Image 1 (spheres, rainbow, N blue to C red):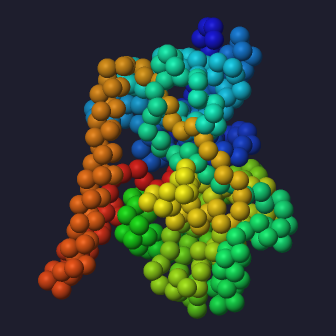
Image 2 (image 1 turned 90 degrees about the vertical axis):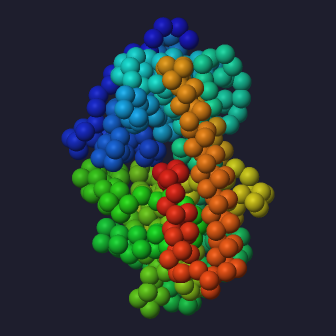
Image 3 (image 1 turned 30 degrees about the vertical axis):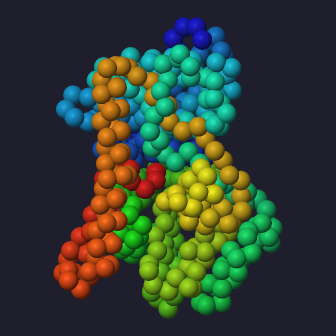
Length: 390
């Protein structure tokens, strides 16, 4: 890879900066997503690049997050797809990362590319090139469903139990409706319960409200559009999901469910409704957006999610994950040490303490006040680890 890529970088700060928007299915690389992130604590930049010697050009969304007082890092979510086809893709990625770093702020200590490339693409591409495996921010693995098939074909491609559960929910009178932003309080009530139950971190309601408001500002015929589907039984909300429509792809972003009446299979009703609605809109792909890499590991915290999402059929996709280009090596390695310690604390120590607390509460619950038990669960549900995607 010879020379420095030509760059054209501009900030994304208002809805006007999102026009015109070329039609893409990858919402994480749209100016719309940049505007949304700019309203939730990040800086966003639209970056066009070209390599003359390789005759390749592309467009990426670059996000910046400040930390501490004087430092920041850059982040590219599922970007630089065009470089995967190059024989020297790793070298091209390093060159691009360093060029972007030089063009922006010298306080940026590294740039993290969460790559949409296949696992095999990076197998032999990083040796001696200044690329370092980074912590994945987006889940690299997913399952996508081809919804150009007929409804009969889609049902036939599911596991038998999934077809049964969909029909059971319909028989039992579970109804599904797109409630839009008006359904957000209902969804958040379910989401907070889900967070406590499953020990996941979620954002505040204002984060998701900002997402809806940003979509309403920049929405066009090709997207983005948001659907908030709520499954109810006799008026009671049992589950909800948020689905983003962009181009010809529908992406299942967030899901929440109640502890009540799970035997009515509301989550199956929701997914089937979302799939058929996306199909009705003329979309071609339904992306379940995030599964663990190995569905055979029953101990994985997302093992149940793997079974649920893959049960609807579809193709499993394994991406290579995140890679970092260090712009200030010493500061980068200090950051990596701190990041590793933080992840160890949240994934190992804090969760172990939480499990111990729940065991004690379960065994001696009568001797504890209700507040003690609730605090154990609440702290686990709101831990400051990586929030649920995206």
